[in-house]
Length: 277
Length: 247
Ligand SMILES: Nc1ncnc2c1ncn2[C@@H]1O[C@H](COP(=O)(O)OP(=O)(O)OP(=O)(O)O)[C@@H](O)[C@H]1O
Ligand SMILES: [Mg+2]
Image (cartoon, rainbow over all chains, first blue to last red; front, side, top):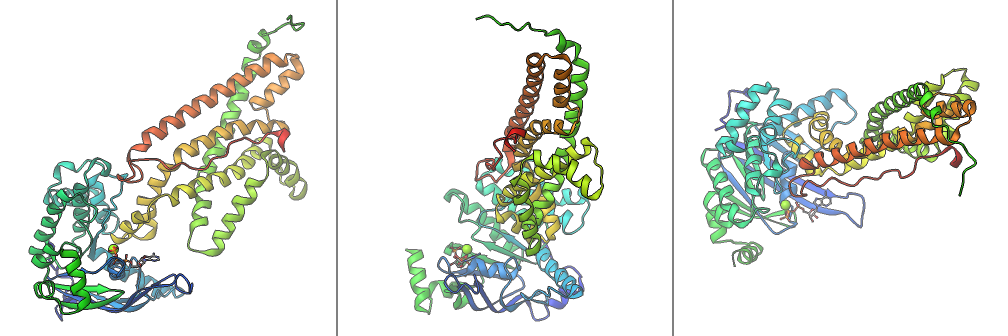
């Protein structure tokens, strides 16, 4: 399993025990278009300690995906900051100062190469084989040689039970197999944090269990994870903490079991009773 | 019905050498213009989609303006107009290449643009999430897929280039068309010579169209994601070649 290497910045980052701390995150889409403006995140704070699994639940549209995209800066926050392994980044890109811009891009790349994400719709590269999908990041972002990357890629595919399909194209794989390749692709970067955005929502029911099993194994191996899911069984069993989001805010947060079995906030209660019935 | 006309097909075989030479020039002209607009078209499409407003506008204006006029006008303008003002003397071959390239760059930019826009945003996001810089995500993920989607339409554009290239005869280039006109003037067998030339163009274009169809089928396999069933996006394409008479 990926372990914290002796990189000084990595060690410095976990001084307080936190792998990632997101503070005061605000995100608004279509800013300035008064009629179409949507305030998706309105001051969200979340943090995850090393080795913990944070499960994010909440109704559709509550901003769960947007929050994950703020953490790896695919959709940078408008306000607030994310501290990952001790490095803090905000959404303010120094556009017109070249030196600072370069520094910002470097930090951004640090975040993205050390944070893996698995998407609901897999987002595999359809023109590449499974092995090439997994090897792309290691070669193009980490600078590994082709043969090193290939070796790593095959090893990661084998770990998720996809060794046999290394030379298959995504179009030749089932949904569950695609998601396994997508997990291998993220893990091949040796991330310090994994984000899962409804990784099982697009799967046929009989394939969901296998992917959840894979995620559970990853958690047990010590990976730090943020998991957006509607699978309450998984949340209760594998999650350490749960946050319930609604309308762009964290409404309730607590240890997984107690929050799910015994929610305090009435919106959490309503959501859980609707989803569990 | 009887024909007063006496067919002289032997003139065609006697002219085979000259016609073959003309065909070669047509092929060279078309291939060069195709290769150049393949590259420049991509550049214009990228400029059109770049996150920099002035570039977008410039590229937009280029595609709109250069698709607005017929090739006939470009050829005459570049060959006579530019020469008169700037004293730059393009030969007829160079003038033909430039005219065909300017026009087809605009069409190919539109083909590339549609293809680039057809790639789901999730592809770019997955590449960026792996830590690839924008340029590498474009080179490794976006462009290879867009190119596959665009290729059949781009090859169809080659078909149009071959057809359009006959316009350069107007500035005296002895391509297949120019040679034919020349021969007709000397040998007075217009029906036979034009028929032979027409058959040659048709054969050439059928081959290229078959190639485009083949590419389309072969490339359909691993594009646009498993969920979309490997379907190639339909791209806009120009229907009619401009003709001298229609300028
Ligand atoms: N790029 C965008 N432009 C405009 N609005 C957006 C954009 N992305 C998301 N939104 C809006 O933001 C809100 C929150 O979206 P988000 O995807 O974060 O919700 P979610 O909690 O992940 O929901 P789901 O459970 O359906 O995935 C939604 O109302 C959505 O329509
Ligand atoms: Mg979502």
